[in-house]
Image (cartoon, rainbow, N blue to C red; front, side):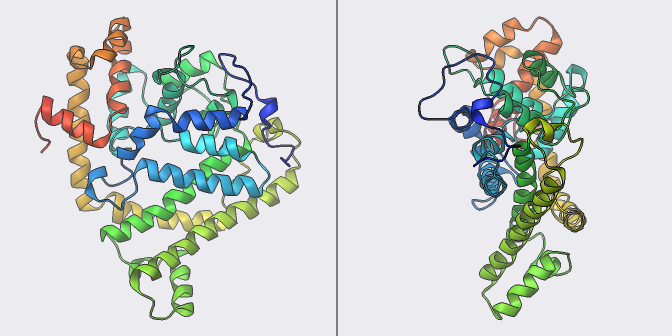
Length: 381
């Protein structure tokens, strides 16, 4: 029942290391399962979204966010007759390359790695699934299909020039056609990411007390959602009111993406995944109206949540953790665990050594990074 422009598993471009076809699972199902069973996926449990992982039991972590993204991706892909397994696999892998401390940690790592080929979490995710996961006897990495690797690399759009050493290295192994758009399934994973974080950042911001429901009544989309709940359920208890309103916001985003995709696909009449890649534009997206409304919400969240004074204090602390650990390991690589010493020994210059240190620090969870900083340097101030 897949659409002609969907990625069909029996037409996959294959894996870097050929494997026999599974009796029970399609290639994309196999990719999904390998991602779920990877060490990097398990570490997402203790990596932050906005708030540092230990600050509260109810805030989203990278793992809960990733599960939410995968759920949205399967829903949208299913309605559009796309391959739900591929959409889910890309969604599950999309944040594997994130550093500890969310975008704060990534900002710090980008600056630290500028002299050594740069850092980007999408490229780091590719490095993880092609090299750093070392559990299989026949290959390093997870040996994922070309389509899943393409989705990790390009779900946010074409890459005209490899923007990091890690991406260039992976692309040299398995040409991902970085100049084109990704499959429709990968585009679904990207927009599902937007849907998920727009929804849960509102929820987490309310829970944290950084803003109130009254503030959201003044914004597009959220204001109408709360007004509808008040009309249908006058006097509803606070937490139920909040949930009812935000699930309407969630639903509006998903329905908008589906409606726009159906219209654009009907107009374009693509007949293959290659037609999707060659379109020169993203086909799975929000409507212009909703996109502008969501920009207003993101601006509100930026000022009231991401740059709130209490969050900025924590950002400064965790930035210090990354800024201290990276040069310490770079100058004293013997401090890395024994299983990393083979990589250190293969690093023939400072750039390659910096990449090994980056792999190690970027793979840390929030709490492990804090523990290592306290053990080796002392508490961050």
